[in-house]
Length: 173
Image (cartoon, rainbow, N blue to C red):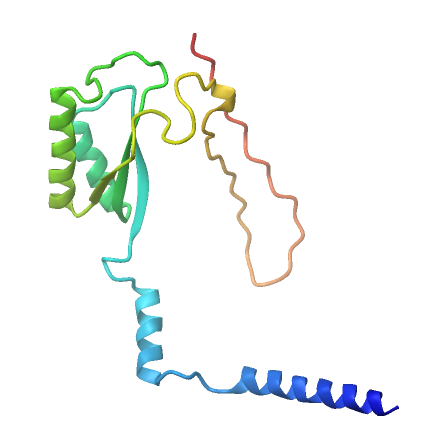
């Protein structure tokens, strides 16, 4: 019987502490809290998105690089990591590490600085850390697909979501 009282007392103390912790005021000054909320709602330019930027099959140009970077900036992307992908293993218009490729790389960094998109580079050419030209399309990187469902709220709904369409690409020979 004595153990039941101890357990009841322990439960009551635990519930009281939980209740108090949920109702206590924040431990930071209000102005700091307001600053956190404001910076979350309107992030600083230094807090932005980045993306992988694949240069596929040596198919790059300075004009295309500038257009891509301008589109990235317009979309709110602040940094891009360049990865050179050449699944066919055959040189394209601008072969990797050629003089023209290095000119395009310098152009990307220079244009990125002008436009406001930081540039980084993968650690190696090819399928960085995940294979090479021997990776067949059914085992290669996947494509993101989606579907949309429009609803009105507030309220509880019970609907079956549409499954996105499968995207398939023919095997290159």
